[in-house]
Length: 435
Image (cartoon, rainbow, N blue to C red; front, side):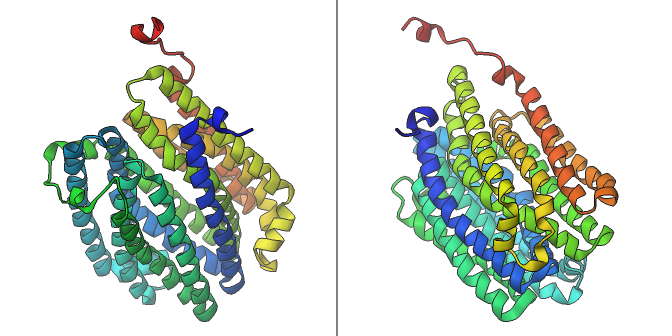
């Protein structure tokens, strides 16, 4: 017996490919966590996380809307080569202008950004490198999104697996040899190596070729890409920003080690939930684009994907929750023992968040800008506000409690926003009823 009849062929394939990729990331992620815990300690782990979050913030600020548009619209027009060429040519030009501009800006502002983000202005050179990393990540994101949009999931997975292994091979020795500085530089270099790997994978694709990215700039495609930005900007800016603020609040309100303990719990969540996020990301947005005009099948696809994502997350969270003391002892170092106390609320928040995250794809696909932006503003605000209120009473555990409560609100409001799709069975078209 297989899961194909339950999941559907597309989702089953995505979970097969995504599961393979996630397994590699899971192993490499645990090794990376262990190395960080041993050689960087809680405070070093928190600073490396700040740098990575900043890179994510910058890339998301400029590239998230563009990448989502390439996946969503690319899936819709992938059989129309002329239209696809206009889309990718326009996206490529926008990406290069934004990437180079941001890299130059970070090079100028490096001392001030280093002082704010890493609490050490002498690390300005790290921020200059981070600017180059953001540019590489943006171009890499465009290539991966294009491959995903045309349905070449195998190439996407292959690229991600190679990059994951190379990243660990760079990051772990850097931490071992040079401590915190090695961890910071190692994190940046992993972003830089991803681009040539993805370019190599794209060169062998039968569904995508380099000439498609040389299409002329098209104002109509640019406007369509821009239509995704109001939603994705809110997500790209406010979610990482809330993480920066929460981490800083824990470091200043408690200690930098306490911030590192919460970051360890969060990092563990990131590692195991990659099994779901990787699989769903490969499949869901392109599938939503394909079913945009078929309401009954769209509803069935959304409900099935939502149920699978939440169920798989719940099972994994339950196992980790029951074994959390052993997991923390094995994955981290003795100084991370308090992480086990943080985990139950963190895991509950993960299950709720995964449901909200899945519905977020639907809001983006349907361009439900008002609701999406509202949630992306409200939920981080609730998270940070909950931290401010609960942390003085509950200590670092208050951060995870605030996360779970914010995730519950996110899921509830996302379901309300999509009530017409989730709770109302769309009428079939007349030609379907007559069959």
